Length: 201
Image (cartoon, rainbow, N blue to C red; front, side, top):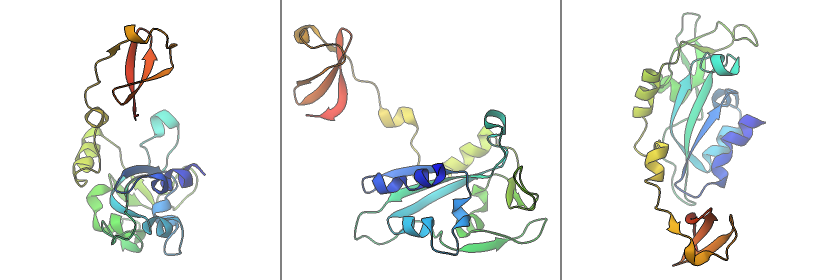
């Protein structure tokens, strides 16, 4: 259920907004070639890119071994043509264990799979398609750098510098944590100062 809710998030976005969805259930391939989640998503969103993490990416902090995909999806404005990468069919790739069917995006962009696909299986079952390898910061940084411009913006750059707190002296009658309006801005009192609430009045 977590995977389905995460990957369906673009439906709640404003057009042209980007949603990075972490999929630990191999949804990127499990719904193909039969109509499913991906086909419904493709009616509303474009795939800007994807990064496949090796099955050990979350072993240290989550105690689990599972191949994980990060899908960068952009909600498409109503009535506009589909753009972005093709991602609705499967293609076979060669592996030491024989052919493995993967999403066509992965087959055409092998550098975005941070490891080698095998059929060695997982902690949940044998002979399952698995991305074998060890995740490093350098591998991840290189993959992120290959995404289209704007697909990923570091949090500190997206937020910009924090605004200077406003003097709360003139709002002495406003309780701490309550809202006030000034010069078209909605502010919230935080102790002895007021900070923008991030909503225009």
